[in-house]
Image (cartoon, rainbow, N blue to C red; front, top):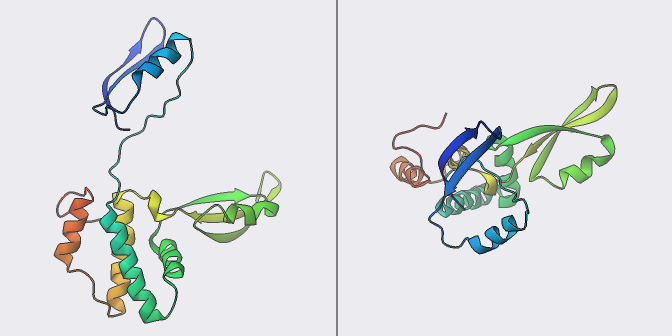
Length: 181
């Protein structure tokens, strides 16, 4: 649910932060919230900057391109997807105990094992873990699709004209003419 911060201030008396949020979403059941707070219950809230999600068109286009690449390369589009994530995707590095490497790998879309490291005298395995594209924001998805488009063009696969790709990027919430760095 999306809220706007109407007021954010420090309360000098209580030394607490007061945040007033507003929303136009009428699905929220304020009677339950009032009831919980009246009983002295605490509410759990996570506040982070809202980002536009990528459009379904972006995801559909990605899979169309992967399908065309799979035909040319005579491979599976799911395997290509994982390869493209490794080339153009978003990842994080983590260090895990050697005996849990396979369990950790099962939790990520794709994982590259970087090798053994020692931290505070303990041996661990450093992993590069890639997030699935369903978690990407518009900029991250745009980078992934630009990479896949480039690879398709190298293989002689027809892609949308640049102006149509730009139009899709505009629909994803990117400013007109903005290049992804």
